[in-house]
Amino acid sequence: MRVRHRYRRRGILNLFAALLVHRGRTMACCEERKRFVEFQGFLRMIFGSLWCRRIRVLHFILDNGPTHAPKQIESWIAAQRLAFAVKIHWLPINASWLDQVEIIFSPLQRKALRPSHFADREQLRQRVLGYLEQRNRHAKPIRWTYTKADLRQDWGQHLRACA
Picture 1 (cartoon, rainbow, N blue to C red):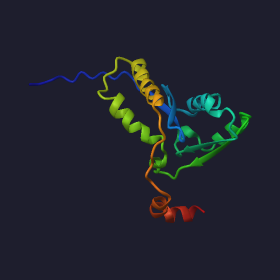
Picture 2: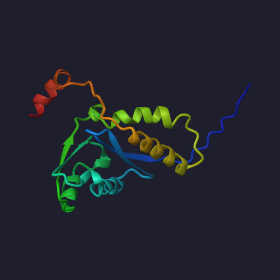
Picture 3: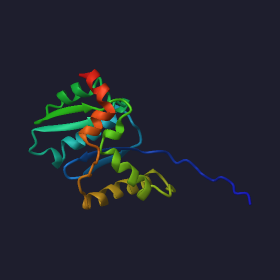
Picture 4: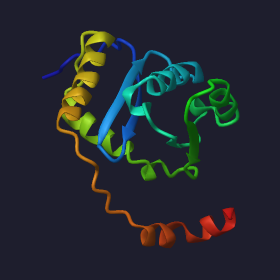
């Protein structure tokens, strides 16, 4: 039997997500574009959240992707005149697997985005954010089994070269 292909692309959404590591909670937003200006909006959302009340230092672990604007982000954050310090920790190139927020994306894909039949972007947005909201209700810190010894073994030469 021959089946005609009826897939109709309805656009994409870009997910910006942050993980509060010690609680396992996720903050996220979906945007139609993936530029530094959208990332700035996401950062403003984080800075204004309960996560940042009564803290002295906020640590961000970021990859070197163009959305994070490595050449602009530090001066932009300084211009925000925040009541707390922001420390940015850049991951080595091709090492996004070191970022714990990435661990959330696989179950999101499996549990919320398959099958991937959405009437429109709004339905997709609701599914993604609904999944993360549900996950936050039962949030637990991620038990990451990758150790310092593993890091030294895998990246020892690279880390020494950067020092």
